[in-house]
Length: 135
Image 1 (tube, rainbow, N blue to C red):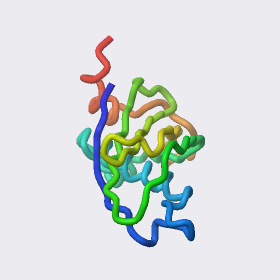
Image 2: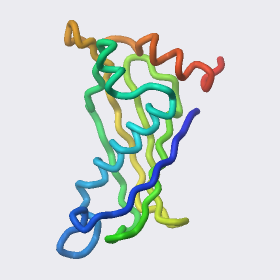
Image 3: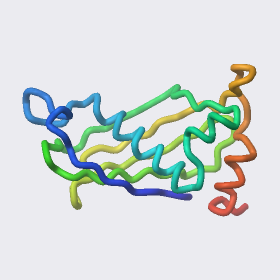
Image 4: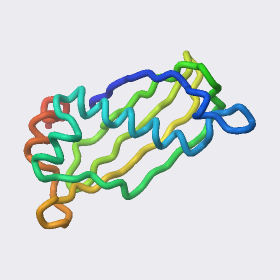
């Protein structure tokens, strides 16, 4: 298992008429967390794509536990619980302090940019995560 935490402050533009963070923003928060997790592992999305791979989203789930509001600082914890094979699943927990705001996951397919077809988890990615998944 490997996880990463990052924080962002809720902007006014993130909220809806009820003054809650708009529900669609949570997938954007997941994206921020996922990008930072991959960066913390030692690779950027850009370098992943330059190496010839894409990670399109094919499944996402969000469970809303408690609202978040303008100017609050949220912590996004992104966790890779299993070594990926052909799919990458990342689990998320979003908090304000000790209060859980949302949980969920995203699943992505590894796609070869050259062929446009699914591929197994690339070796460049496996090298970054192998130390977290000793068999």
